[in-house]
Image (tube, rainbow, N blue to C red; front, top):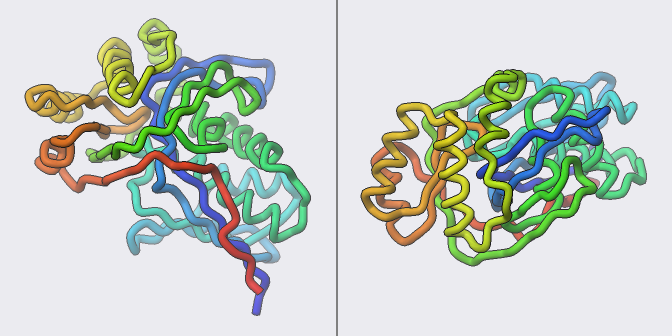
Length: 280
C-alpha cells in the first residue's frame, strides 16, 4: 500500500476585515472578526514524481490549485493531492485556506518534515497572500471559535469564544477574492467601513458584520434581497466575506434562507487543522 496522509482543516466565514500591508507576506494580512466553521476541506496526500491537485466538491472534479502547488514547491516536496469539500468554493467559506492547511498538515506528516503547527500555518498564510486568495483565514483557522484578530499574520493576538448555537448559510455564487483584494478603491471603502472592535457574542458579530457589509459597498443586489428577507423576520444576518452569500443566526434563519437556495447548517469549530490518519 502506498503511504498516504489524510488531514482536515475547518473553513472560516469572515464577517469584517481590514487589510494590513507589511514588508513581506508573513507580515501582510488583515485584522477583523469571523467564525471558524466545522465544515472545511479534507486533503489526501500521496508521494508522486510531480505535484498535481484534484479538487472534488459533491462529486464534481476539477484540476489544479496554484496556492497549494506553490506551497508544496516551497516545502521542496511533490505529491498527488485530492481535496474534498461540501461547501461551495469561492463563496466566502475560507476553503482556499482550509485546502492549504489540510494539505500542508498532511504533507508535513507524510514527508516527516518536522514542522510545527505554527510553521505549517505560516507557509499556508504566505501562499494565500501571494495568490490573493485570502488575508486572515489561515490565522483564524489555526484553531476554532468565533475569532477577533488583533493584528496581521498568524502570530498576532487572536481572541476566541465558542458559542453553542448554529449558524446557517446560503451561497448565491462565487465572488473572485483576488479581484477585490487587488482593487485600491475596494480596499479604501473596506478600511473606512471597518468597525474597529471585537464582537461580544454571536448576535453582535452578525450586527457588526452587517454594518461593515453595508458601508463597504460590497453587497450585490441578490445578496441584498436575502438580507432584507432576514431583516423582515428579525434574523441576524450578513454577507460572507468575500463571497456572494449570506450567513444568519437564530431559530428562523434556516426557514428564511431556504427560500434562496441550499441551506448549510454550520457549527462553530472547536479545533484547527489536524491529521486524520496515516496509511499504512
